Amino acid sequence: MKTSKQIAFASIFTALILVIMFLGSALSVLTYVAPLICSIIMMILNDIAGKKFAFLSYAAVSIISIIFLTDKECALTFAFFFGYYAIIRDNIEKIKPKWLCFLIKFLIFNLGIIASQLLLVYAFGIPLDLPWGKWGILVFIILINLVFLMYEFMLKRVIILYKIKYKSKIDKLLK
Image (cartoon, rainbow, N blue to C red; front, side, top):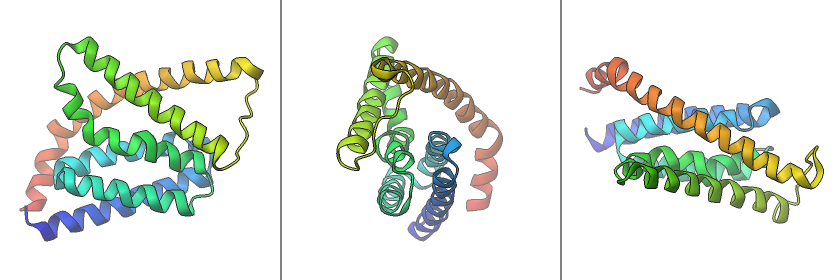
């Protein structure tokens, strides 16, 4: 694909991701859902335009989101995990044995989420309001890891669906 087409697709997908992130910031229910949906779009962008343009899109969305979104948790969740994970996931999948691959995925996820939460508390001054007191952090970590498990399960199915049903149609549009 020509570079001009790659830039055009990366720009369109970046704008779409930004709209979803702004929606996620406006509706607090979508704080974690919006970055998750955006990661699926990043995966498709990575397939269409390549890693270079996917990372440029990720950087642009992360910077714009952190500066302009009112919900910093939504922006940091995208910037610290969901934005780049869909781009590097195929490289992680090549690691053998599978249990090591799975362990690395969980390690990357937990480091990203913990780093974003620490940044929220110490840099942005957003208090950790957890309903279960000091046990709330442990409950949060367990629940967010369950969300990651469901995300991984869903992402495998979305990739298969995309490759079987939509990839050929998109490739025809690009020619």
